[in-house]
Amino acid sequence: MLLTAKTSRDIDPIFWDVVLDCKGKCVYCGLDGSDDIRILRNFCIDHLIPRQANGAHAKENRVLSCSYCNRDCKGNYDPRIDAPKSAGENVLLAQAKKYVHKRQPSPFFDDLYDALQRR
Ligand SMILES: [Zn+2]
Image (cartoon, rainbow, N blue to C red; front, side, top):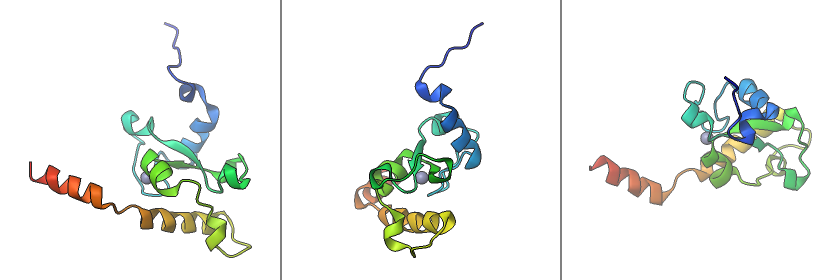
């Protein structure tokens, strides 16, 4: 039987490489998609230094992110703004994690989780 890709992600070698480099986990929150395709398929490639800020599409600038951390928290945040000038990739990633973690609490979702717990 011939296997056919369902989406462009299925055949995107860059996505494949980023998933392997990041061990299938969101670099920001640690959500693990390594053994659950339903989680993994919703992950995104994040550019640590955003493309909008002239971040390269190079391997060193790409990390795996869950869609929540990527879209709702990190967005186009450029970690160089809050990092020392000569900061390397690890320092920039740590700075981006700090930024994402600060943006994660949400009164809306806290209330929603409370409502779910009561069911
Ligand atoms: Zn995440």
